[in-house]
Image 1 (cartoon, rainbow, N blue to C red):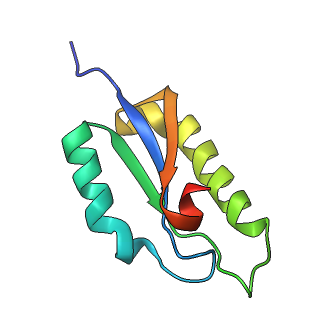
Image 2 (image 1 turned 30 degrees about the vertical axis):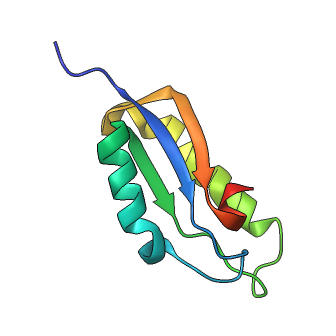
Length: 91
């Protein structure tokens, strides 16, 4: 039998919706994936002021939809996904 699917973590970087990107949080998310044995999806969201609220939330929802639709293919349990982040990303 194959390995059981892992829980998923949808990770949003901090930066007050105006700065930061996946490069600032990649190491932290890689460590989380390894230590917690989870699949982490870290994504860039559109930043203000060029992209007003709720663009950032919409970006997260698109990634969540992707995780739900392709989870099994990447070894993730589509029914066990949690959101995580720091600063604005943790909202």
